[in-house]
Each structure stands twice: as C-alpha cells, then as structure tokens.
Image 1 (cartoon, rainbow, N blue to C red):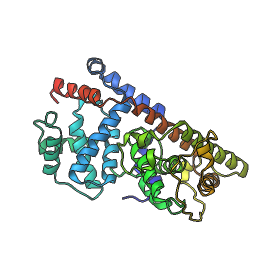
Image 2 (image 1 turned 120 degrees about the vertical axis):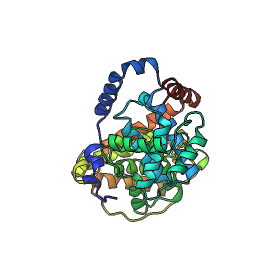
Image 3 (image 1 turned 120 degrees about the horizontal axis):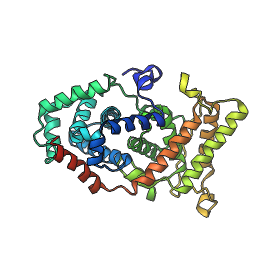
Image 4 (image 1 turned 45 degrees about the vertical axis):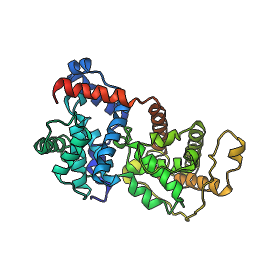
Amino acid sequence: MAANYWESTQRRHWQFTKDELVMMRQKLEEEEAGLVQMFPLPQLRHLNIYFNQQINRLGKRLGVRQQAMATAQVYVKRFYTRVEIRRTNPYLLIATAVYLACKMEECPQHIRLVTQEARSLWPADFHGIDTSKLGECEFYLISEMSSHLIIHQPYRTLNVLQGDFGLVPDEVALAWSVINDHYMTDLPLLYPPHIVALTAVMLALVLRPVNGSGQGGSGGSGSNAAASAAGLAAATAVLAQAQARAAITGGGGGGGGSSSGPVTPSLTPQGSMLPSSQGSADGSAEGKKIPDARMGKVQRFGMWLAESNIDIEAMVDCTQELISFYECHEQYNDKHTREQINRIIKARGL
C-alpha cells in the first residue's frame, strides 16, 4: 500500500466537497429521470445503512477482515458517484466489491466461494449470477473507479495514536465503532482518514456506550445512538476551546492541515479507565462525578489539537455529520429499503 496519503489518488481524485457530491448525484438522476420517476428509493443514508449491513453479512460468511469490508464499502460509494443505483443490481456490486477489496487488502477469496456465499445469502436476488458475471462486474467496477484501488483507512491513525492519547480498551473499542459507523455516511468521500480517526477519538472520550458496553463493530445501530445532546455539547466544547486556543497561540485549527499533512505534537501517554457513567454537559450530578483523570484526558486532547495543524473545522463538520446520521438511523426501516431495491431488480431483470 502507498504510505503517503497526501500524494495518493484518494486525496487527488476521490475527496469531494458536499456541493460537488450533490451535483454529481443530481446529474446522474437527471440522466436517468425515467428510472428515477418509475422506481423511487429511500433516502441515500438509508441505502448506505442497508449496503453496509449486506457487506458485513457477506464478509462474516467469508471470514473477511474488517479493513477489507471497509474498503469494499468505499468502493461501493465511489461506484455510485459515477453510476445511478437503479441501473445496477446492488447485490452483484456488493459481492464484487468484497471480492476486489479482499484482493487489495491481501486476504483474497476464491471467486467461486464469493459467488456461492452471495447466492446463499441472497437466493432470490442473486439468481442466475455466476462467476463470469461477477468477473465482468469486477472490470466494470475497476473501470468506473479509474483503477484507483488503494484506500487509506482511519484505523491506522487510531492504532498509531491510541498510545499517545492514553486510550483504554473501552475507549479504543468505541472509537473503532465510530469509525465503522462513518462508512454509512459520506465522510469517506469528504475528509481525510486522520480527520475521521481524530473525531472518533474525541467522541470516545466524551461519550460512553449504553450500559457501559463497548462496541467493536459497525451496524450496532450507530453505537447505540451514543450521540446524545450532552455528548454533542461536550464534543463541540472541546473543538471550540481548541479553536480559540489555536487562534491565541497561532497554532492550527483552520484548514492548514489539508495541504501538507497534520503536525502532531508529542504526548505523554496517560492511561485512566473511564467511569461507567456518561459525562453530562448540563451540570447534572452524574456529570460532576467524572474523575479528574478523565477530564484531564479530554483537556489534553483539546490542547493537542490547538498545537497541531489539524483542520478543526473539518472535525466539527464530521461530528455534526455523525450525530445527524445517528438520529437518521432511528428512522431506518430495513424491510422497506430491501423491498424497494428488490423491486427494481425484479422489474428490470438485473
């Protein structure tokens, strides 16, 4: 894998603004106006949740590593910025993306096994699809992505910095879960992986999973909708303080991190276990019981951000996008989404 994200095809060709994504998707719908009118689909966030679930289901059947499944999810997102969803069989694309991602992440699966497991998982929607069709779809997928197949993931940044930030296992598990969840949003197409990883670390420091149970995988209904109002307020406060401190000291906090890479000040590792109660920004009794060690860890993170060249505004936007996604997840209807997709496949004979 190419070690330098800043010179990668991911940064040069597959990082967009929100307006650019909207325009690209609108153009696809305008080009297929008849299909769009004939076959309505749920909102894109719900489709992303459904695709994420199907990739995870197939990946677990094949025993695929999480990073390969994450790569497959990015492939699907990239493909659907170039091709209208209604023109495709999403199940065939998902199987192909997993097959190709396994090759790129050096955990290859035999094409016959992938086809067999996909047919077993989606018997009605994968009927008649064999290895030759999956092979054709692989070339189609590679072509639409312009052969840009290397994906830089936030997991690497999390693994590198967890010791520097003194994260305990529960915090690492929650941060990992937030990273998993971000693949159900547009964030992989909007921001560099280190921005996502740092946002996940921040949320892990200010939030706690329900009943104190860490979540290590995506599809956990958005980390049990851990993005509560108190957590959002705490996260926003951390970023606001970091921005203010950066403005005073002349550090980062603007968009400077997007050009030459983040500057990372040195940290003294600190390991303190988070309490089982969730921190509250409204001054409640539970919030006042948070140990000084935990608050110190949050403050140190904010100071680190201020001294670095990290784009804090991008972290603010990432946080808001994740909070919005968790709220949207509560309205997700799996049955309705599946039926709408299957209707297109059957009607068009895909």
